[in-house]
Length: 428
Image (spheres, rainbow, N blue to C red):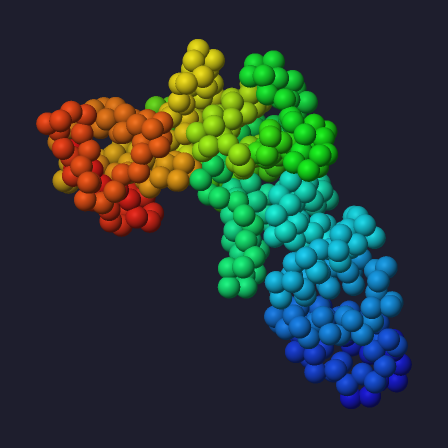
């Protein structure tokens, strides 16, 4: 179809874009004789190709108007997306950086920039970029989910949905030694400077130089976020100015049988602070202790009402008490803050399971159909978890476990009953 002017063509393209009729755009534009004459149309064509998953085509058309687009945030953003989805991360990163430099108030530029930084193993900067985007879009689920996923040390594919090239491009974060929890707040305010001062006063924790040589003690995405290093280990404290999505915190609060008001209290939260520790150069136990210390310090904020971590919501006073055991003796392990011990009854007997062992590179454990009381099961499982984590023991299918030479409890490995994935079952 012939168009009398560029304006007429663009009007039609805008209509198609508004209707999300990407096929119509793709069909109309590839016959352009002079792409440079139709710069805005080419941007729309690239947008259509990106939405249809034709990333190489999008790249080819964007390069046709590179001279005009080089100083455009939109052009750089779309080029970065096209290259990212071809797993050309190092090549895509400068375009994403240029996009947020040219148009710093465009939130989606920060989204893709954060993802690319993470894919290039620059986790601290990725969290900062996501924080910049969240500041432009307070409470936006894409940004809050991105920050949570990065904080949890998920793979690049899990964070972005972009297929990795035969596993060659990895984020490099190990699941063991990665800890993440949410401090629940009943108001959208958080004094991160007070937290940093309290960490120093109570625990002697001070940021060290960032690996590479750059000091990290003032690294932040905004006044309510702090990302810093202790040696090579990254610590991120990020205010999320919204509730934990999808009622997740309220759902897991129901599991806390030691705090009757857990659900009602959790319902009052209006924001949450993500606290993440991504260990490098620390053992999982050392990283776990650090995580508990940071969370306990955050819980001293006057508007902190609980912490959602390890599959439940803990009462602040309980969590702080467990953390303070390390002040009495640094060798004490805060297992009750690391691992949730789920208890329930069934037709075959009493049952207990762990939730939190995977952060230490261990499999979750279940005891099913036991004749022992729930109280006995909880105490016994606590002893096992303390032993496995503290002594770095790996329990294996077919082995036995016991507290004496006479006691030999069989261990089997099979699909979890109360926990997803494979778990170790101990007959007790």
